[in-house]
Figure 1: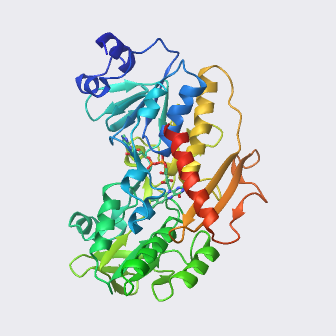
Figure 2 (figure 1 turned 180 degrees about the horizontal axis):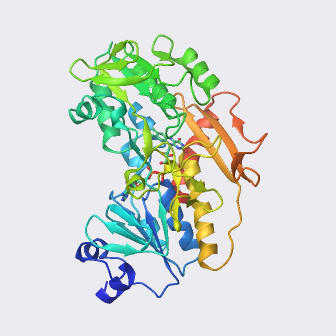
Figure 3 (figure 1 turned 30 degrees about the horizontal axis):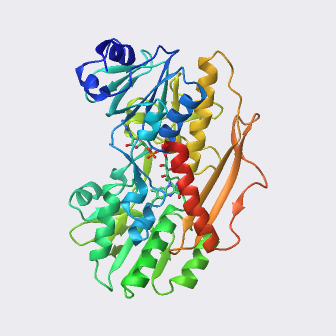
Length: 422
Ligand SMILES: Cc1cc2nc3c(=O)[nH]c(=O)nc-3n(C[C@H](O)[C@H](O)[C@H](O)COP(=O)(O)OP(=O)(O)OC[C@H]3O[C@@H](n4cnc5c(N)ncnc54)[C@H](O)[C@@H]3O)c2cc1C
């Protein structure tokens, strides 16, 4: 790429570091405006692609710190050995084919007044509209001793798919038959309400096959299973009696790494593998940029455009948002948020007014190698309460677990990966 093209792309304030990051991008045609997207997960990748599809005259620059995309959906199957890391990993060439300029870098700061993003490699990128979809980070401090125990390899969360997914699989493989795997779930809201219960089911399925004397102990800070409760409990009773034990109102407050113990408010629980998922908040960049509006954790948005209530011109997507009523933090939702934002940004940058839209959530969970269960809902704009609300009578849950739902679950995953990235 010629330097003058780069300067056109990155703005006059860009430094040498970002030049390296952007090298290899296709040369840039004159454009109406530039949209910068932070985060190439379900929200950011989908938004980048759809803006280019709906208005190819807009420049889209995606800033992602990782070299490729790793999917949390299906990652629980990797723990059981029913899928591999190759099934949940892919690159960003699909987005490049849509003309998205993918920059491997970390966004360090946002100046919403100057409309620039500071990159870790040096320099700033200017934008007309900014999308921030950084996913979650953790409030490690709420579980005493967590970070030290994690750094010592004594506890994992594996709640961002990637190296910790593989590390947890290895720990499960190395655990003695007769050992105890402890899964600790934080108070809602957390990403993927049914995700922990799917994980418990997958580990139980693996133990049933490979270590029949081993146990899964679920310590849930919530009073009861937060999603598809009846279906999960029926599966556990039928498939994993004597293997999987569930305890509600069991909030982890500390880790004693030396004794491999999770400290609850009233007792200590020992395990051989400690998989403690700490409480979440919006990703670090949202915090640094002052986009967090609520409980020091989440970013409130206008659900017609996904525009931040804290910073005009900045749209926040996915898990980082303060969820609308009855809206889960899911890949399905992040993908839908992205389409709201993409449509709104295209309208705004073309001088038109965005219209509110209706969106759909579907979330499958495996309960055994082949069988899955599903929950779905439709969310529509409510003009009186100025938010998205679940449409009465829409959605619901599967009538029972089945192999057919398992087939649909794999189809859902392949479809959303393609919709977001290909
Ligand atoms: C075990 C598990 C199972 C799940 N299963 C399902 C499921 O079956 N169905 C479903 O719908 N959902 C599922 N989910 C939830 C789903 O993964 C999340 O809701 C979804 O990933 C949210 O998308 P996002 O864009 O908000 O964040 P993410 O997908 O996490 O993407 C954030 C991206 O931003 C990047 N990033 C962050 N900060 C920066 C920065 N400063 N600079 C550059 N890049 C940055 C990160 O590297 C990451 O790539 C599951 C989650 C888990 C943990």
